[in-house]
Length: 103
Length: 167
Image (tube, rainbow over all chains, first blue to last red; front, side, top):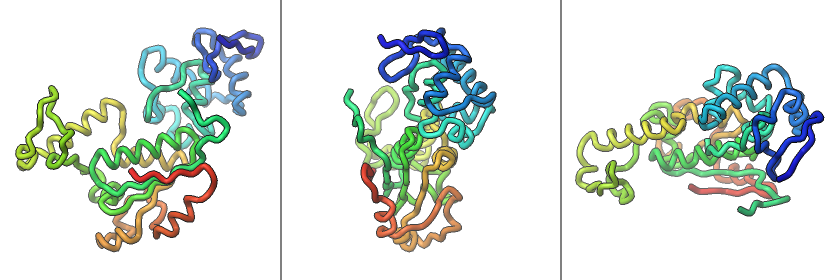
């Protein structure tokens, strides 16, 4: 298993860079992962990350539509906050597995 | 699983020519999936596919209950073609399809198109088919960015690592 150093913490990651243990996550680590992805975290970002983590821990599937329903941001803002591949980037920064949903 | 390594897909141009629930959703899922991956996506509706972007039709797409051998009743029982021809059966089956899709968090057509366009995906209509069905631009939903000829469509489909997909 690969390991990466983020903000002084050693994190177990898979070969795509996703956390294999989501309990190793904290906000400092998130900021460092985000920096690697070219994103400066704001409160809006953090609110989404917390939302994704709570969805993940309750076992709900993640989809772009669930972000829309979260009440934190709409889809357009989500794409603006995590440019490129938003759900993949956001889950990586949130320290949870890559989403397996097609929507 | 192998992946495309250092030459990933950059753009997809997807064509939908049929107006059943499953044909339209196949195109929408593929387009939205591309947008989610950061792949440039253009979705082009032609012929009966135009129903998906026609304001008066887009909320009432149907699944064919006649001439659809893969259609089965709950419990995997066969679905006789003659049953599919009865009034109301097509509407009932279509409502059931939509209910099942909603359970999987698959949005209705208009909301799906909101998501696609919010992410930068583009939706177009075919000029020739619109002329044929006597449709005008104002008959189409606001998600439609433009009405194209096939030549204009090909102009958009240029660039390396682009795929044209006919669903």
